[in-house]
Image (cartoon, rainbow, N blue to C red):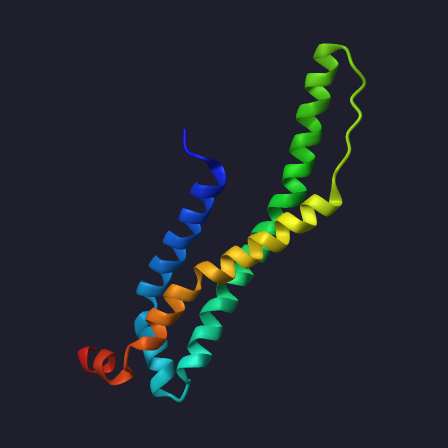
Length: 125
């Protein structure tokens, strides 16, 4: 079994890199219309942050609810009081780390999208 955070980071990198490869002609078209390479980089990073933010908005509450439910079932089976504490500081630090990781992982695909000259891609289409 693979270490969970490593597999999540790898999945995020693979999905961002694949999305960047598929959309490179769109980025180049926008560059031909006047977007600078820094604007392309910023747009790719914002897309990664938006995806990571949506995952947090859905995943954190779902994880808290599922964790609480599972703990209540396990505590009931063990015959103990199901006291549940949600560490908000830890959740906030993990959310900030997740967003930072998404931004760092998006740097390579953003650079790849911004590096290509638009004339070459538009010539091939």
